[in-house]
Length: 329
Image (cartoon, rainbow, N blue to C red; front, side, top):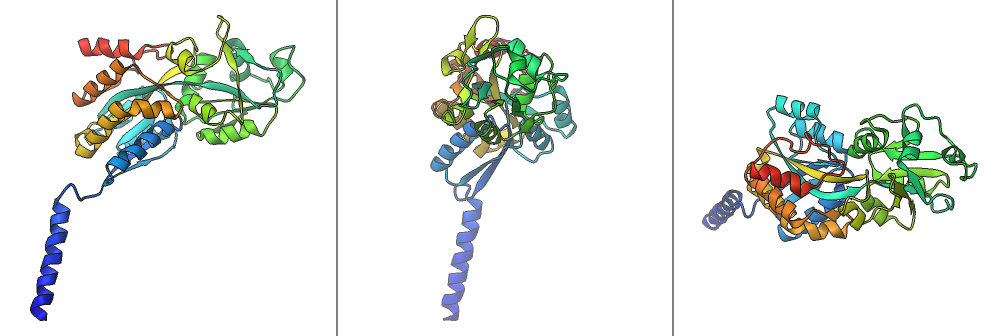
């Protein structure tokens, strides 16, 4: 009996050692955090990836683009979701900690301006009206102050929190300077919180990513934006062809270069860029042109570091043209 017991223990130990040394049986993880705008994309792709790769666990957080970059710069995550390019000071902070990064565009989004469904008076706003509402010195607190034909009703504002890339992009595109905004509004990095706020307030006006409108079109009403060429509603077509301006934008992944050497991270990024476009459409975002994904995968495989997009004005930018230009150099 003792001999049999010893054999059993040896067999069990051997099995455990073999399992630990076999990468196919080990559980590995990928940590992602950042933009709440990009979250639905990455979450959908991560779920599908894990179905096909059950030994790889992908966790996705939503601390906002700025919050994600803070974690990224301190090696707390492998990948940052971002709804804007990395800022020079964020790249400097990462470099101070020895972190190089690979920047990958993944989709188009259109920041959507929404009101409560009971708002029957507004169908569009001009970019100038939006600037007057949101600029730092604004005291507009009634719809009638926006346009004479609007009713005398209190205006309640909802928008992205200051850690959000959507906040940075919206303020730059509408007010003319990133982070220049009136402070007296309900702010959140969680777009679902903004949806709930607008849905519950007849006088509300808010902004967030197009996918959150698509998922909640029964709760909020979409406004067209007039940039001087007539009102245009955001849609997959108008966001993709650039006619929804100036609120169409690319969104990104940032991958730590050291993490890019891990086989399971490589596997995930390949899946993201090859299988992702269909999933991107399913969650209400607009895929990039196929050529852009080919160039993005090439950029990742070549481990090209640094930001290509932070050096460019991404308002109205054609992703594939910019990336093709880099690939040719």
